[in-house]
Length: 348
Image 1 (cartoon, rainbow, N blue to C red):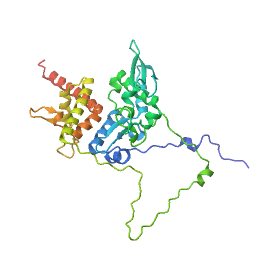
Image 2: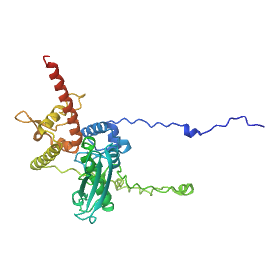
Image 3: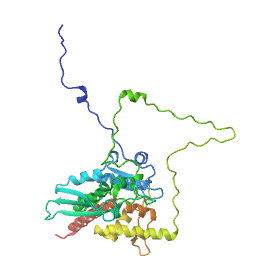
Image 4: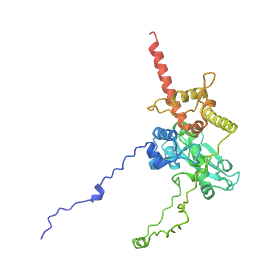
């Protein structure tokens, strides 16, 4: 008997199309899956940064991190994400990174050489161990900086080197975790991209033998209240309340840091403060998304950092790259509108 069935080529699997579900990035999603302790203002800035740079937190391209309760959350970019952006630059013709000096000593440094089209000489940049090695409060090196000192320092050199070579394309991107002046081991979610550990797949026979059993729980005695279940999660510390003098000193320190970053980008502080005042004032209506008090007007009627709230100034410091990029867009549009108005007012 002949088989009348026609033979088919290929398989059903090769024809199957799987579409990933679309994720809507909103306040609820960020608080549930990315940073549960972030405030409404921090989440608003984070979502806008994701949109501006075209970065996807679901793909671990960008993170929102609350390093410590009572401190502002910071936006950090994934290391491999930054490297991919650098490699996309058409004028990049080659680069190399290496380390020099004895490891974990003050003279230990990482260097990078970048060859860029149109430049007569290669670009060199170096960063030193004593400036970037991250330590715990006890003084000990954090896990990654202790186990991978060369890799960690080279990542800082690469990040800074590419920013200096391509300021327009990469200058405004958030910092990588290794550049942050805080212990990166407390990051919510992992940023281990250069040394990912993969466990060997166990045979099915061994998998069936593995079982999880809970230890027997003791029933409380009649004269004793039931004990709360033990947890290995660190207890939340109450942030220290600063005195008036400490707040003023911290405020001046933050303002100096912000103004230094503006100076590097050749941005007029007065214009920048005006932008913050006009665009990010506390909202009067619910539909307006302006919840920040970075600056307020002083007794002369001028926008001033000294009149801003300390917690909002801390936010501005951590999100300065985003705010600077927003200012540049705002300033560009403002100048275009002024030019258009001048042309319309011409008598000929």
